[in-house]
Length: 92
Image (cartoon, rainbow, N blue to C red; front, top):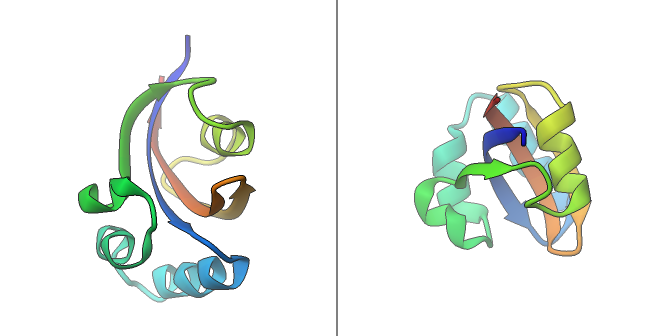
């Protein structure tokens, strides 16, 4: 079963996600922004979700992690939880 490690920032609106994505593009630190803005409990770890298997996450999130580029912030990715900015650290 394929596995991956990723981190994310979860917010309520697409506009908020786009604003944070622009901050990242301008050099802001992912860890710091996750701690400040994310609504997910993972924010205490800078958005880190640790390692998980393909299929453990909801499909749009899973697809971004397992099909998207590594070490590149993707999103906003909409799920029933809100809008995610996702960075895949590694896949195996």
